[in-house]
Length: 111
Image 1 (tube, helix red, strand yellow):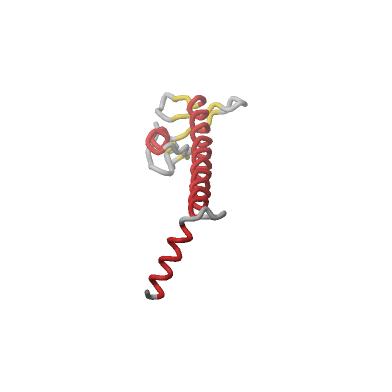
Image 2: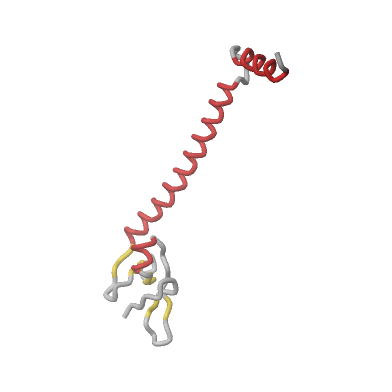
């Protein structure tokens, strides 16, 4: 019997016993850690979705096609409807040289 065969026999012999810290316990602990990581990811995704849902409730459509938030002090903040609808990004509109609100991200103009 070679040294390698002896090692294989020894490992298979040890695997038959339920030793504290055995491979089954290690597999169980590993799967628990994976589940905890998965739960953490789901909790973070849930927070993002709650924020988006809250934003959808307060977003209003203006006459020019842009979305805007009506803040508690009555101010309106315009956002690009295209970026929100397609990318779920709230991109604040800026003013172009001609005074037309334009999205800095997708370059859509709102007249």
